[in-house]
Image 1 (cartoon, rainbow over the protein chains, first blue to last red):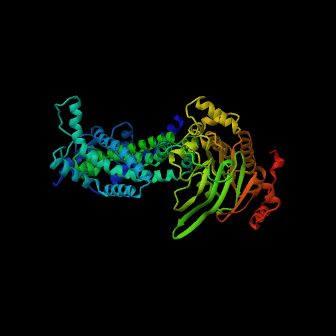
Image 2: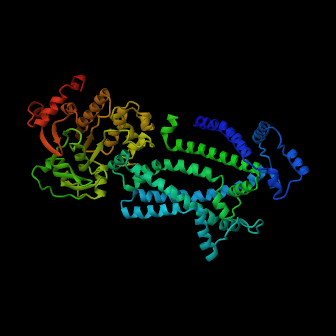
Image 3: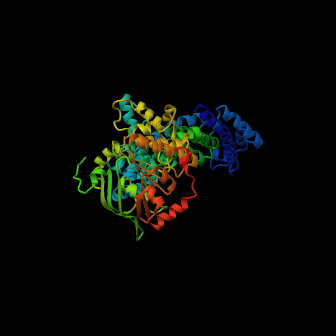
Length: 322
Length: 280
C-alpha cells in the first residue's frame, strides 16, 4: 500500500513541473503590457518603466525568465505581486484557508445529502418517490450557483435577516470560543449552503445511478437468497460498492473546488482564491495568477492521489491489480 | 411460519411440490410465457435434473420457486408452490427469510464471480449466511469447516481472501459453502458448471454429488448438459418453451425417451465424455 502511494506521488512530480512551465509560457503569450496595467490609464513615464522592468527583470530572455521562475517556485518563492505589494505565496496562504473552509463545509453537507437522496431514489420501489426526488435534484442541480446564491441572500439575509449578506466576518472579533465559531458560521452558512445544494444534487444523481447498477448485480441476489433483510442488504452490499463512483467524482470536484468557487466567491464577496484569481486577472497581476493556478493544480493532483488511495481501500481488486 | 394443511395426496412425502406454475413476462406488447403450467416435485434427499436449451424456461422455473425473480415485468405469476407444505408464493417476506436462513432452500449460480461481492472477504460472505449467526461455535470455526467440506485444504487463507483472488472452480465451491451455511434441505444449482473449464466442472460436480449424499440434501440441477444429468440425477425433467415435455427416471429417459425433443437432446450429447470413468 505504501509503495502504491509513493508510486502515485512520484508520477505527479513531472506533471507539476510541466504545469508550471506551461502556465508561465501562456501568460507570457497573452498580449498586454504589465507596466501599463500597473500605472493605469496614464502614459507610462520612461524612467518609471525602466525601473519596473529592471526590478522585475521583465527584459530577460524568455527562457531565462522561465528558468528563474521554475527554480524560484521549487524553492517556495512564487514571486512578488506588484499590485498587492506582497509576496504571492503570502497572498495564497492567506486566501487558501478560506477557500478550503468553504469547500470543506460545503462538501461535508453535500456528500451525505447526495448519498441519502441517491440511496432513497435508487432503492425505492415506488416510482413516484423516485420521480419526485430525481426531478427535484435535477432542477436544483440545473440552477446556477451564483443565482442560487443570490436567491439565498435575498430570502435568508435580506428578508429574514438571519445571515449576513456577504464577507467572512469582522477583521477583529471580540467574540471568543463557541461564540466566535457561531459568528464565523453565520457568514459561512449561505455560501456553504449554495455550494452544498449544487454539488449535493450532482452527487445524488451519480449515487442513484450507481445504486441502481449495484442492485442489479448477482451478489445482491446471493444476499437475498441468504435471507438477509432489505436493510442489511443495503447497508452491507449496496452502500460501499455503489460509493466507488462517488469517491471519484467527489474527489475531483473537491480538487477543483480548492481552486476557488469563482462565481460563488464573487457573489458572496468571500475573499478566497477564486476572488483573488478574478481580481488578479483583471489587474494583469500575472505572477499571482500563475501562483493561484499552480496551487490549484497541486490541489487537484493531491486530491487525485487521495482518490486513488481511497479507491484502493474500498475496492480490494485495485490493491492487488495495481 | 404459517403451517398450512397439506391438501394434496402424496404432498406429505414431497419436499417441494409445484402445481401448474405459470410465469409470464410482458415484453413491450408481447407476452412471453417463460414458464407455462409446469408441475414439478422433489422428494427429500433426491437429485433432480432440469434440462432444456437456452430460453426453455428452466432458470425462470427455479427463480420463481425460490422467489428470486429479477425485477422484470412479470405479468403473471401463479400456481400452487409448496415447500414442506408451506405455501411459497403466499409467504410473507419474514417467513421467506426464515426459510432461507435455516433448513430451507439455497441457491448457487452460473457465474460465481458476479454472485460474490467483490469488496468483501470470502469468510465474511459465508459467515453472513450462517444459520445462527454468532451462536454456539464461533462463526470463523463454522466458516472453516464449511470451506473444508467443499474441499479446501487451507480454509483459513481462503476465508481471508477476496473473490477475485480465487479461480473459477474455487469461487463456485465458495458459493456452495455459502449455500450450505443455512443447512438447507434443498439446493438449487442453476447451471453450476457452465462457466467453468471441463476439468474444473468435474471437480465441482463431484463436490456437489458428495455433499448431496453426505448431507442427504435434495438437489435440483438446472443444466443444458445431459452428461451432468446422467451422472448425478435420479430423475429428470425435460423442458421446452416453458413446458415440461417429459419427466422420467434418468435411466428410463436415456434408454427410452418418449418425446422426440428428449431424444434429440440425448443424441446431441452422445459425443460428450462419460465422466463416471474419471472417478465419480
